[in-house]
Image (cartoon, rainbow, N blue to C red; front, side):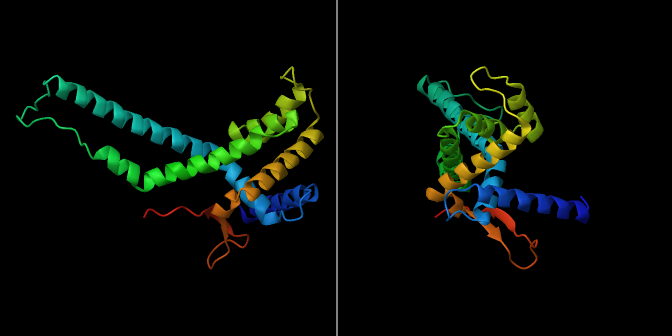
Length: 210
């Protein structure tokens, strides 16, 4: 991406954030809160994937342990070709539950649950559907806009592209207010440190393993 394109994208992003702020009813919401909210929403599907993958790994461990326990109970534990007894790593599950991966898993659960709560509690049907399509399903903007414009959902009347854009901004405002109220945004940081981009680099303040 060229520097010119980067500047244009940053300008569009800033203008969008200003428009979002203008429709906000709460004075304490700032542009940084909007930036953090957008970034967190953009990471939602990635965090869900991490959660699912981790849960699958835990299930595999539990299944393996259950199979070993069953064989042991029947007195038919297999032998390796070398004659060494086939044993399960009985500490694997305990270690997995205590390391950084599990902390990250619980942290992502916390973040995604708070995002889902904010989205599921939207009263406006259009806004709720827009939030689901864009952020929970990861649908592209234009595709989601066309979905609402064509009125595929019988229970939700079609809306114009302009209305879609306005409601999307209201969606972000509502989610930002919810995430700021429950302090979820405290875990999202913008680093303006040395060597960083002028607009700052956004990331998560991850919990530490004790």
